[in-house]
Amino acid sequence: MLHRLVGDLMTSAVVSVRQDTGFKDIAEHLAEHHTAAVPVVDGQGRPVGVLSEADLLRKQESQADPGGRPAAARLLPAERAKADALTAEGLTNGPAVMARPRWPVVEAARAMARHHVKRPPVVDDAGRLVGIVSRSDLPRVFLRRDLTISEEIRTGILTPALGLDPGTVTVQVTEGRGTPSGTVPQESLTPVAIRLSESVDGVIDVTNRLRLETGTTAGTTQR
Image (cartoon, rainbow, N blue to C red; front, side):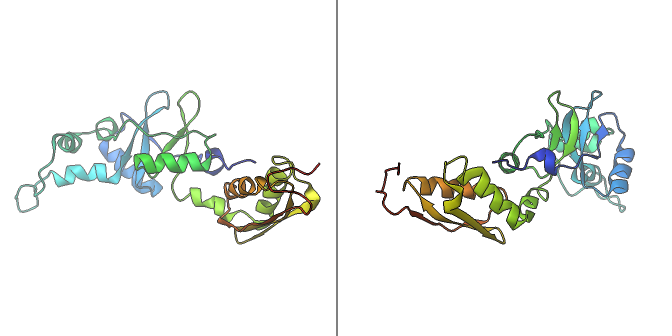
């Protein structure tokens, strides 16, 4: 069974800025590429953090309005430092939470939820930026074709992993909802088959239609 990987879903043509990129160049960069956040990389192309439009707005928040009245918001020291920053290095939220190309989608989703990030940079084994993955990329696994999912469950789980006879089991998948049916030689195989079927990328739900083979006893294997 092969899970979809971050490398399959990530955007490789990633937009980034260097630590020494100036404030105005950053603003132009975000506008030109229609993006709200970018990774900030060092001289070796390794992400050191992520910079967003909100970080640029700190400068506006700290300035007096046209009438000369002081800024309404009282900035914390860290926010004040961002408001005074002139380059990406001073504006960066770091260190960056990074993903790896060979992470399964499930691992990426858990890391993003745990660290409350939406678009982690993806790095290679040397820590260099190779892409970016966003929360909107992850649901693409649910666009897999029903026939593809069905074949993966049948030929990747029920037959080789559990040793079931291909002629005794079938898998119907409709709009991501799987229904394995047929017979199993051992009752204890049923919950394992269902659990593994549920873990296949693109599966929304699994309904069990497996039953024990005639002539076998629960918990035993037919010889």
